[in-house]
Amino acid sequence: MKFTILDYSVGNLFSISNAFKKENIDVRLSSSPSDIRESDAIILPGVGSFPAAMKRIERIRDILFDVLPEKYFFGVCLGLQLFFERSSEGGVDTQGLGFLKGEVIELPGNVKKPHMGWNRVVKTDESLLLENLKHFYFYFAHSFFVKPENSRVVKAVVDYGVSIPAVVEYENIFGTQFHPEKSGKDGKVVIRNFIKIVKR
Image 1 (cartoon, helix red, strand yellow):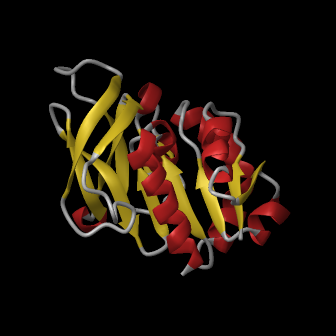
Image 2 (cartoon, rainbow, N blue to C red):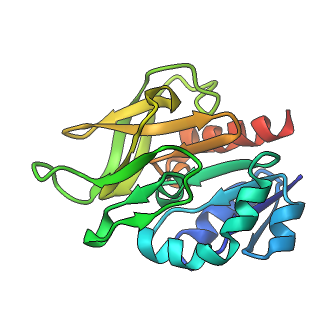
Image 3 (cartoon, rainbow, N blue to C red):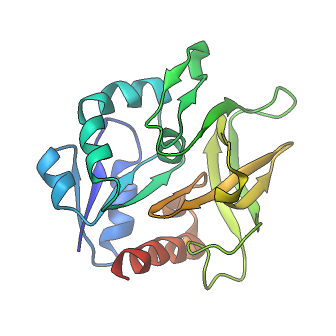
């Protein structure tokens, strides 16, 4: 199995790469079309600005759409947000990848931003990413969150003054608003579950 972590010049590339390497996965940091096409799974890492990330992804956007039906995708934090149609970050309406319908909006004004630290996640539906977990505490670091049009894609939420989708799953698309690579033993289980999904 080959996994590609999309290198679009955001933070967190190496920590998430190491998390998969520790599970004996052949993982590479790349935005090369050939690497994307040869991979079994594409991982979108998650620290940075939505507009800046989309600007860098634009040149491989068509390739990602081409391989979407046949690859597994896993988005972490910002990576999850990029799956959706648009974001208002920076006061500018930025088009996302549009794999899933919905938008990315800012946390409400009555909460501290960014939302940073450990929080309890609550399952709202059966989740492949959360299989074999008894406790659901994960590490968050974000100021924006996804608002899907189809609520059925949301498998778990976190309460932070507003109900925030914490896990999204739809067919071959998976994402977490939290950082599994920074979430200790439970985070490792999430990463292992995604690997298991790809192996099926």
